[in-house]
Length: 593
Image (cartoon, rainbow, N blue to C red; front, top):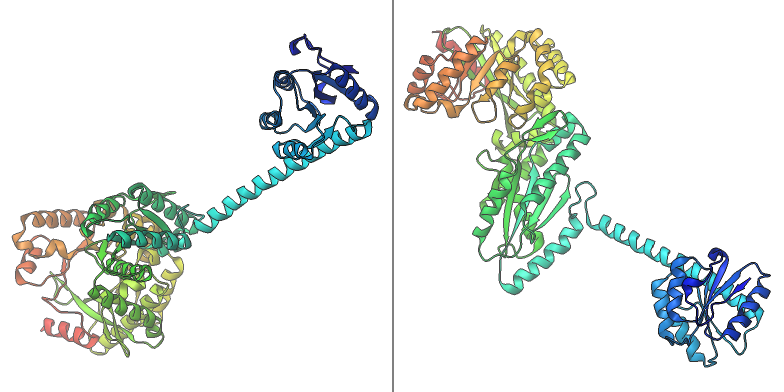
């Protein structure tokens, strides 16, 4: 079974046996080759063959042609010798067991061989069939163990990379998480401190995110967060660091900069990312973030920097003028106030601190028609008077929205009874609701039940839609609007012309009333462009069977011009501010006389 290659024959001339059951031996001495081959045949009972080559260069040729159980390597070959042979073969053929066979009995040679990649070492002077067979089997087993150990180490390293990624990144968006942000931001601030430079922190919050989750489900909410993260990533520079720190809150800490003004074009670039809506399944939503900005070293450490940016973000959320706000002491005072408002709001509902004020809606053609808008008011035992501009934005982003609406409807029913007691019949009372509420069958049913428990009828109620941020998808509540109208409830679209609504809503939605935004009515007598808009909108609404209310009228000139342009109703401080029910009733009594 032994096949040897003599020195004057090339390896290409050799007829290869089945290499899967074969050992490869590199030995230039034919006598030694024959001796050790015989030992292997004796030890393995001729179950394996042995193929011999006499040059180092022939080893690679043989290994490239087949797979061998092991390589038995003479350290000193004519064309190349030494420990380097072991290292070279081990590097080129990492899965091949190597047994070094040499006439050198020095122990350091054995150690060097093993350290260079051999699995075992034998001296030619002491080798026997048994020791040779044991050495070959040991080499095979050790190589298998090395292979498994290497794989285990690679698997462990991969798992460590995965664990580190999981520990440092948000699994939904792939962005850095809060912990990673803390570490990275601290390094940025340290670099800024050493170089006496500035850093900006931008704190983001998605307006109306909770409503989207509640209305469309968490899968749509997750899709929105992923798209939002992608838009942020496309706007930031390589040197800026972005993270999701929880829920719908994101932060960006900029690279160091010389002047604060350097952040302005960056903010504008971010804002442009949200000029187009988000396509979320069948829904297209126009959603904007609120952005708070704070600077280091104005804030001397990271905790304060985050707090200040959070304050500024909260101010941006309550502002109708801008999506971005810079931190100042005034902003912090407002933030502290709003935190107290938010903390006390639930108790206010429980303690019946909320009430309604009523503002007349005046008919152009009839002095006898009585319409009112119910507006939520809050007098707090702890905070005194709380402005609607303070608590309404909080309510719209909380689970208290329905509680507030029910409280207002209760006040409306009480007002209605009071008016009847004074001999005043109220034709309709308008209550503000959101598209999210009106899309809920449970909410609509509860409103009808509240009306039924009072002396009112559904015809006495108007529901005004005020949810600007979701106006593009207000059609999702279209079926409930139809349901309420069939029962006599009127539907009004508020703030028309403010930039959120479109002409398409007049064609698609079942509306009874259209309220023109204050921006169209302000000084309309001097604004030819607004006159054209109001006249056009009014004409189109009338053709669709929709009445028009001009909001925010404060002067006689605005009133006269609104009448000339075809408006059916008027509302504003010229007639009355929002007042308690007795004063509202008194206003109509005086108007009749």
